Structure formats: structure tokens, C-alpha cells
Length: 269
Image (cartoon, rainbow, N blue to C red; front, side, top):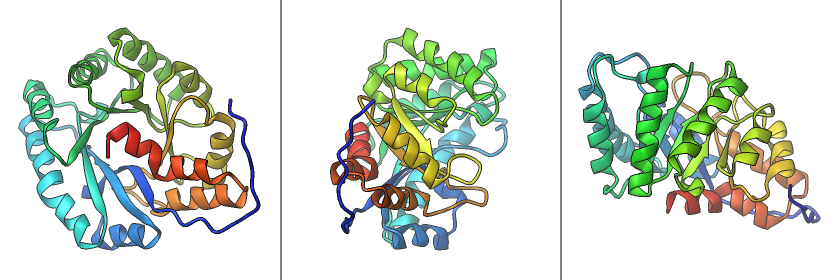
């Protein structure tokens, strides 16, 4: 837990980082709307919306993110960084060794700042294997990794995810456990890993996220994201959460950590 100093409401102008979007599922107008709300930097995470038949699909997906999505975002003033990885719902039917090799090579690319999103969806043996492999590669390359937790059975899957990560002995500062909610945050808080709060219609409201920030922003770094992408989303949810915290009188130093400084530290931005 963290003891907060509150201050009288003042105007605090902060530019935000959204630490988890899917830019390939967003129109230029949506990206422009992010920027108009002060969200000037974002991390776009790899996700393929159907189970790919071939692992080569990921090689082209990563190319598309770097060579198309980043320039498209730049046109509207959004500085986009890239996270590459195998989402548990997108594990190729055949093998995934080529994807892992591509991920390793991209750790040297200046636009690629993390692996992600990775994680477990159902906790199957295959998912556990693929996640373990990606964690080991992140450890080997001293590279940040974004770990998805599902909407369904969140506690059960989180309790499978954390021991797997622990066994790899990866530096906890490299790991973000994402889509953390009010039910799972106490477990993740005790783990020592960074906490990702996804503020979205079916996840957390800005007001609920603000309450969790006030309760849990202590030793672990928290980051905010919208998980914007392929479905109807609240595009400006990160900015709304910071505004909610401002209205509660949270000190400027915490606002800066949540809006951009924690993300800059974790992802070396």
C-alpha cells in the first residue's frame, strides 16, 4: 500500500502513453481521436483475430505493424511503438519456432519495445508451453513482456500464470501482468510484477481504475491502457482515468508516473 499526498485541484497538462492497443484494428479517425485527447504515444500489441494456419502469418503481421501501422499513426501525430508475440488465442496450428526466431531478431529493432501480448487464455498445456518459451526468450534478451489475462476465469488463470513466470526467474521489472481487475489485483500486487490496468467498457471504468490506483500504487509500477482495437472501445479511456485522478486531488508526481513515466521506465522509451 502507498500513502498519498493530495493537493488542491490545479491544472496539470500531461501527455499520455496508452500501453496496450491494437492499431491494426483501428481506423485513422480513431487514432486521430486518441491524439486529440492527449494520448500521443502508444504501444501496439500483436494479435491475430483467428487461429492462424501457418506460423509465417506472424512474420507478416510483425512486418505490417512496423512498416504500415507505425507510419499510419505518425501521420496523425501518434508515436507508435511495437510489441511482438504470440497471443494465446493466436497460437499457430503447426509450429511456432519461426515466430520465436522472428521475435528474437526484432529485439534489435528500434521500434520494437516489448514482447506481447502473450499469456494464457484457457491454461491449456499448449498455451503454457508457448508462454514459457516467450518468457524464457524475454529473460534471455532482458526484454519487457506483456502478459495477457483473460476475462473469464481470471483468478484461476492468473494463479496458473504467476507460478509459471516465477519459475523462469525473469527480472520482475520486465513483466507486465495485463488486464488486471479488482478481483485479481491483490494477487498480482503481491507477485512483484508490474500491473496493467485496462480501462474499457467490459473491463474497468475510469472511476474504478482510479480507486485501484489509489489503493495499490505502491512498490509495483502501474500502467494504464485502453486495449483499443477490433471492437467498440472507449478510445480516450486512459486520458479519462488521469482526469478522474486529477479530480480526486492525486498528487502530480503520481499522475506523471501513471500517464507516462512508468511506461517510459519499463519499455525504455
